[in-house]
Image (tube, rainbow, N blue to C red; front, top):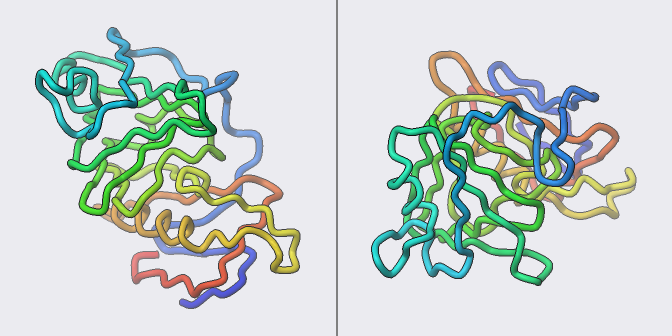
Length: 213
């Protein structure tokens, strides 16, 4: 299927692009309202050269905290505290966040994925973020082990087109979101791609959706 300069509408067999109403409960500044299940809260250092590294030289990285939490419940927090418009957390070595860990990303904090890096999170439910909040950048991959609701905004889609094609070209973000959703397809279950009500997402490139979409 090819869609150009589209007002995003993707009907799918297992992946649907839909727009939700007021079904999302918000945390005041940084994410969904959800009952805390974590016993440990760990704050990552954005200055680390690689969030996928650990050891004496990298004591406060995503990987270091995943390893330290082990099988316990825990929350790993990426704060927006660099003093700049965004706080980048560079990930060049692939890392997996298991089901017992929640990743909380403050608005403005962004995981910069290196070209060969994949960040695998157990489920979208393990993310404590806002629907319109960009959480990843770069050419690496965001993946989920199990399907769930995936938001276009997580990949940087803006959705500001007034309907005349003059808005932000969201093609790269939309392609990344579609690719992520397709990759979570398993056992006849797929993820749902969600946009923000009232927003129009512009793509100036063709979007190719596979057979399970």
